[in-house]
Length: 269
Image 1 (cartoon, one colour):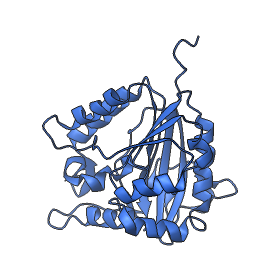
Image 2 (cartoon, rainbow, N blue to C red):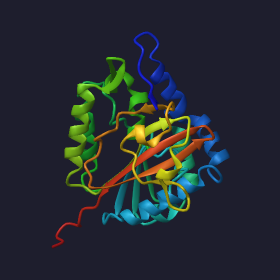
Image 3 (cartoon, helix red, strand yellow):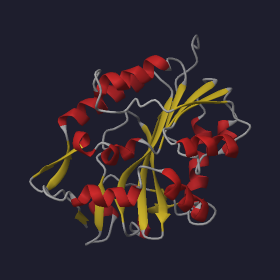
């Protein structure tokens, strides 16, 4: 197993991740989804539905962060909420969300709460998210694992030919964990990305979608596999977590980490 690393001149890891994740979304990603969601993506989509139905936050409103067009979202889960606030910059994705889930009461915004730039700074931009949505449940749907591609200079740096998180990103993760501590939340995000499937003996379940453990890539992939670390370790503060495998393309395997917490409604004993 071989971890890809940054090169100071060409930054091949970040270029490779951009190709693997297609973090910008837009119509190329939607075309891939239309082609694969009812075939290649089916085991993952069904596993996500199972996970979200079990999460069951008590809040009547949901903030859905970075869902794209919701190609892997469960309509039954979304229908439980009186209002779903979608934070999604892609206008095509917002249009598709309304078309694909007409039963949902959508409130859409393209506001960027996750930029490291701006007069208020990275952690302040994040804090504004929690100020704007003080009482809703929060679902980060595949978004947090894209930060290394969306903001590579802020998230990643090279140290001794290894990619590591910047101090700023580590601080940002700490702020996120602190903000989430008193909220109902769930995050599904990339942890590792590779060209080969993980070892079969680590797969669990009939759909071969849930992974028994994915904390160590050296144990997860065969020797010689090229694997990208997207630096989401320690991203969410949860004792409730599991690992899912998403075969996004025939030669693209995303190991996804799910973490969640469910807070009791106000006034509950």
